[in-house]
Image (cartoon, rainbow, N blue to C red; front, side, top):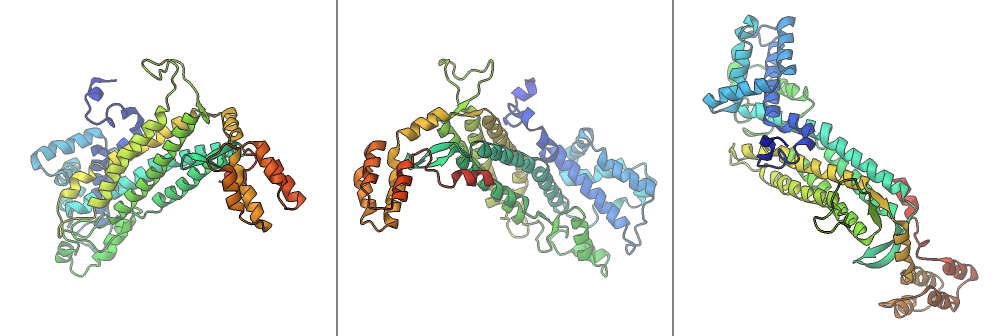
Length: 455
């Protein structure tokens, strides 16, 4: 590990840096500066292309191509140039404006309209649009594909073990049997719903000036339809236009997205704990890897570290994400700056979420079901058949069926022979009696296998 990485304060840029490269282009400061340049250039091009704004001469194909190149070839060296200007201006968006003017300084055509760079904009017009683009890209290009991979891994596991019987443990106690695959399918179904809720959040942006009223726009061109023009500009990025704002976009849809991410993470924390317990019970074995050590003193151990790592990262992610969703929609009157430093941490929430998903995927890849252990648990839990027996007794009108089975089984060990003796004395049709006698904890699984295969 390089020394700068060893000196990183955050493990996202230290220990885990090699696992988060897919997020750096979106949520690093370079990613933010790049998106600011992208929005500033797009705004200048939009103004120049509007015939009604006659004071701005339309750009030639050569200048349009150069403007596109400014964006497409924007790199870390360019970001460093913006930061150098910021060291003087002490204002990051103004530094971006000055950098862009310097970058286009040799282009006479662009320089004729250079004062239309950042025309009628407040910094938040540029920032909120940039943040919206960063969020959408981080979600669509990184987070959703990772969740899709996880869903497919869970689906494959559910299908593979759809018919493998497993003792349920409600309240930690032996309960009606299920299948290993059905329990994994439950997790997949919850995650699919959560994933869809993340995907469907419509991310909004505003572009309406210093306090949201187009004051400067109207002062310059009173008769121009700025609201329609600016709506079209925001929608050109594939974002939803928000016409009702103060100086800042109120971040409500950001909060919706962060809440949706946190709900997905909570489901996955639950999954991590269940898999951890199944490993502890011996229902799963873990594949070993040559050279790995489970304990510094106990050579036999294979610890469920991937599930523990995932749980910890989902927890940190949710602490951050929930702060985002509670804080960001709150801003004093027309604007305060408390959102600025918070928004710079969006990548932290995404980073820990992605680490959690990656660790969980790795952990799932190591699992091997242990049918012998599963069967052994079922074989010592014949009392779970009290449920189907008393239910059949109810069907045929036998008095106090629940109470009879409670007396026979509650808090007691029960054998197959004792149950068969009880069944033999029941006044029910022969066909039903035979079906109950043939029932075992391993085949009393209802529709579990069918449900698991449908996910």
